[in-house]
Length: 119
Image (cartoon, rainbow, N blue to C red):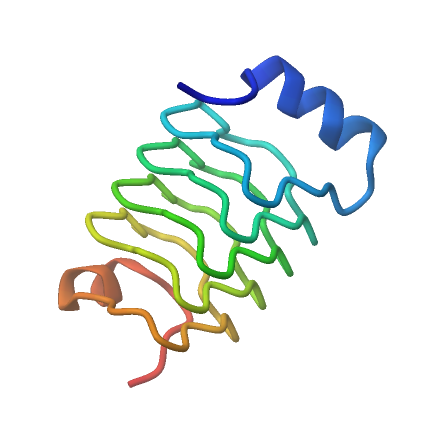
């Protein structure tokens, strides 16, 4: 069960520049279209969350659980995904340019879906 609702996340993002949501359970939430630029989501649980069209430039997601999360058309440019669980995550049209992917496994399908990746 998520620690916060979509409404509560929106409130936090509205009043806090670079929101601190480290370790928070946001699993399964519809977070589509939200601005997480520079947010601290280290070790957050975003399993199954919908982040379609979210703006996550410079977001810190190190060691987050992103299993089955939806990042369709999400801007993850220069985000930190070091050590994240990306199993089943959908990166269709996502911008992963200059994203830190150290220690993660991106399957060939995920690489084809995303933009900004170099082999």
